[in-house]
Amino acid sequence: MKILVTGAAGYIGGTFCYEALKRGFSVLGIDNFSNSSCETIEKIKKKFSKNFYFIEKNLLDDDLHKINNIQEVDVVFHFAALKSVPDSENSPKKYFENNVDGTKNLLNLMKYASIDKLVFSSSAAVYGDQDNQPINEQAKLKPKSVYANTKKITEEILEDAAHKNSFKVISLRYFNPIGSHKDKVISERINNSSGNIMSMILRAAIGLEKKINVFGQDYSTKDGTAERDYIHINDIIEGHFLAYKKIDKFNCYENFNLGTGSSVSVIELLNTFNKVNNKEIDYKISPRREGDLTICYADASKANKMLGWRAEYSLEKMCKDAWEAVKK
Image (tube, rainbow, N blue to C red; front, side):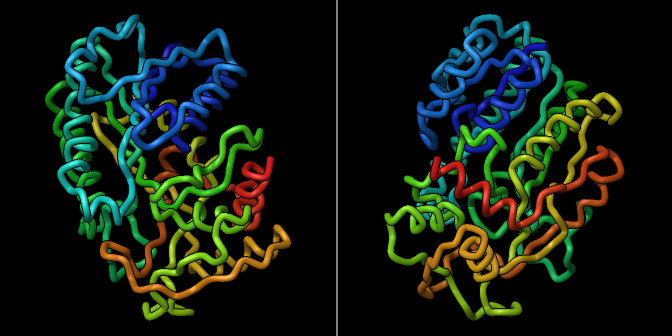
């Protein structure tokens, strides 16, 4: 079975490639390294020299159809996207071109190569601020950032394409992936400006920063800091395999939340990381960032019921694995 993975060098896309290869899939990966590093690709190539094929490519390129053996692909796993909320507010045009136009180009490639299945890496950011928590898939989408809006628009494009072209598409709305694969080969990137909380914690853990920035302590939450649904990347990856396994059972398009159903504040996350890893990372309060949400956690009962998926890993395990991979 050959699969195409966009964003194959990223934290989630790379971890997915690694696990897919372990499970016996043949993987064709593409990435332009705009939000990732070739280091991940080299690690995967070293471990799986036979069934992993990689091409440095931008989804905006006009010659996507010239990719060798593209007609052999059975399904696309679409991870490629720029994902920083603060950066998206500063560079909206870049985000719309990369995330939205890149997906349109990918759909054209699928039509050219007669590929009719796609699993999309979406985001809970599409929900924005919601009064009713936990959030289920029926909630009205209210993206608060440019990044979130690009995910919403991409979902709409995919749903339309699925109906018009008889594609099978599943959008997986991740909440907040952290941690690392059990083999500790691929870790979260710490040398980037995504604003990801675990990346900031890891930078402090290895001594690159003295303290982490906590953006806002005046939210209407239990300790004043924003609350999120943190989920182990292994659970996210398993959701993709189950989505592919069940994709033919659905009519054209479906979306699913992937989250634990637990709301954890930024301070709780930091305290848990310090406790399980014997660290004493401190923090400082900084102003809120534009586009950040107050609270966001999942009702994942639809994925539980229809995909047979359930989050298995604890917050402690997420924090432990995140540090062990970077430390290694």
